[in-house]
Length: 167
Image (cartoon, rainbow, N blue to C red; front, side, top):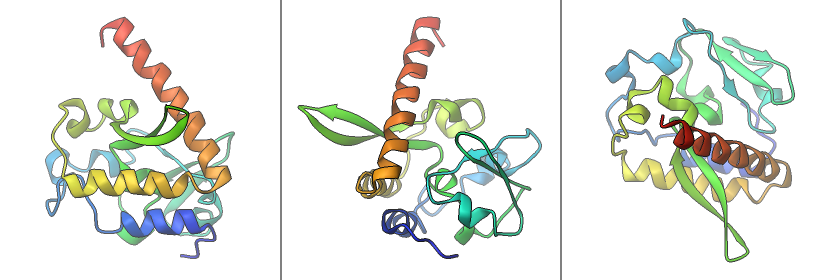
């Protein structure tokens, strides 16, 4: 798998072995709901990933403003997109005292499928740190930083709406 973006390469490397439950396979807890194609779900591709996953067997890239990727129930762990590597978390961009920082949150979009997110299970600290560090690397790339900012704003709005609706 050829990755052109240095920031993306660094993020992939940080998350290669990190998993939400440490050494345990979190997919055993829920029947790998995030890896099945029964629900028709897909994952967003980060900038630079569309070119990679368009060439890999076992993945379907769905074009759009933000390209999506869909697998068919299983894949080689080495070939997971970044969204799968960080799931069910997201490296949220926050502005603190005029400086952009990364705060790792449960991705609110994950709470409908992932029991770890819906039940707010305490995740392995190494995994959470790897997601945070990957976010810091991704902020160094202009295109990916813009994607993180836009997605962070969307997620903040989604969280506010969920609070207002009492969800």
